[in-house]
Amino acid sequence: MTTIRNRIGERRTAIGSRVLRRLPAGVEPAPYELFELRPSGPLIGAEIRGVDLREPVGPELFAELDRALLEWKVLFFRDQPIDSAQHRAFARLWGDLEVHPFLAQGDVPEVVRFAKDADSVGVENAWHTDVTWRAEPALGSVLRAVEVPEFGGDTLWADLAAAYDNLPADIQERIEGRTAVHDFAFSFGMFMDPERFAAMRAEYPQVEHPVVRTHPVTGRKTLFVNEFFTDHIVGLPDEESEELLAFLFKQTTYPEYQARFHWTPDSVVIWDNRATAHYATNDYHPHVRVMERAAILGDRPY
Image (cartoon, rainbow, N blue to C red; front, side, top):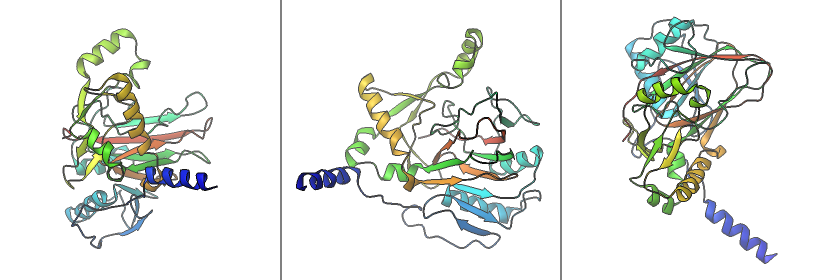
């Protein structure tokens, strides 16, 4: 019995306690005057009430929404019957939008459509940060529910600053200053014929990003590797790189760092792609699930 208790104690010590720090050091929360904000938990995710996305968003409202996004990383809106043009206009408040080279477009070029049914199974069910295969990955994304299944199809987000904060000190030391190679080939490349792959590879070569990036606004350090797009850590032997990446990928999966959202028709979510990873559950097949997304152009991670 003593041996079992010792093992449990050692194991729990190795895992460590979860320290949940939502805001950067020295930043105090301030109230929101133009909408109601209802946190989903203590760390990440909040529902915004009292905003109609069909109406123009003025500078004062945008300032509060932007502050809420930086503070909570993911914002949820319910009952927002907007069309693709309004969707695009809302996302553009944060900057220019990408036209995705691989995904199907919706009604406007900047909005992509994810349409799943009995003949098309969801494949987004791995933790990832969007378009890290670009030299300048997305600042954020706005996702809208067009048609949802009767049950299932939730999306989860993880706070990558919390994931970094709670890494063991020796792991933080191992990854300090290191970079990793990101590549579209593992996800989109498998669906391309050789000629198209060669053309896309010429346009989107492999790119290196820091394993730990610094958020350009909050200054928080965030873990910046993901299962979809990260190939290897530069300068490490293959086996060591694979082992370390597997450990870092797992760090995203702890529920303490996560928020989960159940979609209803006309729900809209915006997330900070510099601070989060997300996972779309594939538990609704063969039912229909149609989502549309606009991604905001970002900057080069450092």
